[in-house]
Image 1 (cartoon, rainbow, N blue to C red):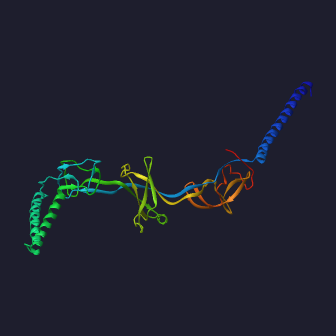
Image 2 (image 1 turned 180 degrees about the vertical axis):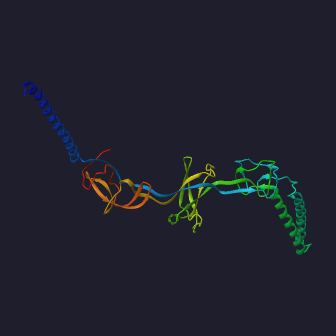
Image 3 (image 1 turned 180 degrees about the horizontal axis):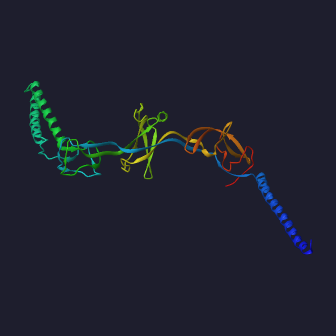
Length: 349
């Protein structure tokens, strides 16, 4: 080997030796850093966040989607065919029972209104006159009974004709739709208008056999509509399964004093089947399980303590704990993933 090659090899050997030392040093630093983290956890404890156990309100609900309707709803139809002479209301108007909403012409061929009215007025005058004579003892009861029968027949006939000519509101409520216009010719039994009683709203939901066993009349219920919550009660439940739906129906009513709720929209109906105003509640994700049962971790005197718990009712993301936790315990809500019983912990916020 000549002198020039020797001089070239020496610097390379020096470079590789220095790189090896640096690599070993870096590895040692990383190992030292890793050990330092373990030492920190061992010395100071694993950081955790705790929450003091307190009594809180808890309820379990069943949720259903259903359409709202008025407590009373009716679609009034024409008793006879003919032309609509007059419409006395518009959509949104409030009507009382007996108010005339629509009218047919008085001279409609199908309606002998004027004849019936005249016959009733004559029968009524004769009835009143004979009643006075009966009370004075001037006629017999048999004579009066015949006149009374004629009067009642005439009255019933007139009321029938009146109902055919004047279409009345069946109950107090709001006119929600009018299906025809003035001047339209309609056939018999054609739908004319709808009325809804909206001081209370009602909804019907369909539930399973297991759910019907949890629901009782009088239970609290609520709905949310356009960002506002409305409270109500379960008012009726079926005792027999509907053969078509293979389910049981439950009906709930909701107060609607300001008429904010409308008939028709689909809402989420919540029925409260269980309530405890002083419950111990734990988020579902904190509960773990092993061969002995379900458990959580609490912080006690700087260490993690494994507590086996018994669950009560479950609702959504929460559990009601019936035993295993006490008021004032520090429940570990963050940092429990790598804990075992007795692990040293450090409470942080």
